[in-house]
Amino acid sequence: MGQLSLKNVVKTFGQFEVVKGVSLDVAEGEFVVFVGPSGCGKSTLLRMIAGLEHTSSGDIVIDGKRVNDLPPVKRGIAMVFQSYALYPHMSVFENIAFPLRVERAPEAVIREKVTAAARILHLDQRLQQKPGQLSGGQRQRVAIGRAIVREPGIFLFDEPLSNLDAALRSDMRIELTRLHKQLGATMIYVTHDQIEAMTMADRIVVLNAGYIAQVGAPLELYHKPQNTFVAGFIGNPRMNFLPVTCTAATDAGAAIDWQGKAVTIPVDAPPDAVGKTLSLGIRPEHLLLTGGEMTLTVTPSVVEHLGQQTIAWASQGEGAAPFCTVLPGDQHVVADRPVTIGFNAADCHLFDENGQALERRFTPGSAAG
Image (cartoon, rainbow, N blue to C red; front, side, top):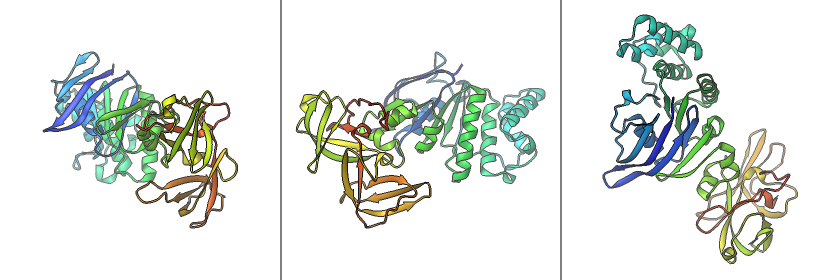
């Protein structure tokens, strides 16, 4: 088991509403990631599922049972926190065994479950060591082992990798993905890091200011963002946005004008879009140094040479986000020297004046399709 249903869940602190009517169904065995900027409500939502925060209104249902009034230990969940919360005076074995000892499980059961969890997490040779003798990644695995031995229906992870360095985070992403496949368990994972979300999730829940902005598979969110928030949040570096004017809505799509340059974007545009200012979205990795159906000239102020890629950042004026271009690493781009770049219409996104995406028409051979 491990099914979860959130039904119009709301959380308020005094007069401040943090989570604003969230509804979501999570299937048994899914790996679902809550992602969003700081303050969007993702950790609060996870803590309500865990029973660590009271639900102001709405229902939390686990395996068909409403659990709003149940304490955490009765909900069939186990939670892994950002801090490892290990007992420094206890061995790895005793740290993993701790919840079983609280439940007064027989010694034979404890040894069997701890040994099995240690084998899954590659901690077999570390069971007699203390947490202070372990690396950060190993300590996080001990915390995960403590959750595994409880055999929960749902695993909850609250930014568990944020205290690790970049190399360890990469290793642990692989470990958690492998663990999910091996256990077949339902996992709900909170992070502000979209790379963690994109690489591990079956589905991503993008939260913004207490609301769900979009739910979908990682590549669905990348290729078909429903609004400018998701478009700008998913993808690294973030999507570029240009203010354009819609000049016509035809069967071929929306004809747009940007500083006297015109192109038709293959989207379903309503007739009333004509004459309005829309947002043209183009991902940095879809920009070209040569060719393209539309070109523009930018002057990079910062150029990052990363080996495999060269990333150039150009100012769009005061108050506007910088315009970013991702190019192959062997391209010679110099700061403060103008460069002409291009893009194809099929790689673009178009958003209305309210920030909602106009439905795209993918064409064979396009980078987005």
